[in-house]
Image (tube, rainbow, N blue to C red; front, side, top):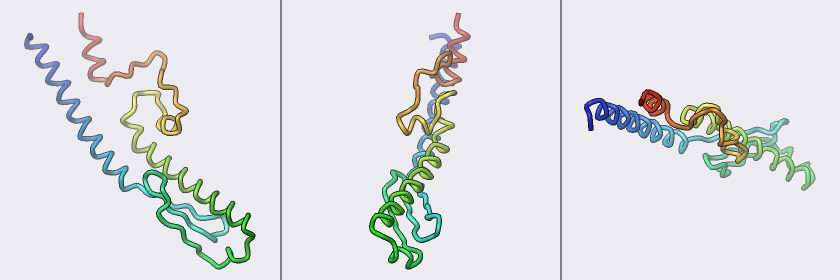
Length: 135
């Protein structure tokens, strides 16, 4: 292996190690995420953890006692959905910088992303730059 190749391999290794360290930091931050939603008339709050698992439900007033079962059920479900949407937005914000250009983190998390980004390489920029310079 020539000196230039060794330097290129070393630069790629260093970039890989940096990316792995950043991924570890992101994973730690993701594990601490939570989101809370409050119903429009402030009867209820719901908190969800990183995976959208409900971690807390609070009835903020006694107004729920006057609601029909159907209305209360719909209120709880809407509030849970809102908390989960907030969580997904936070997670997408954290993930975004780690994704290839043009790949939407929120769409990826929901399963709606087009992972075949036309005209864009999915390779990390450092590797793409090195390969582009090769004869």
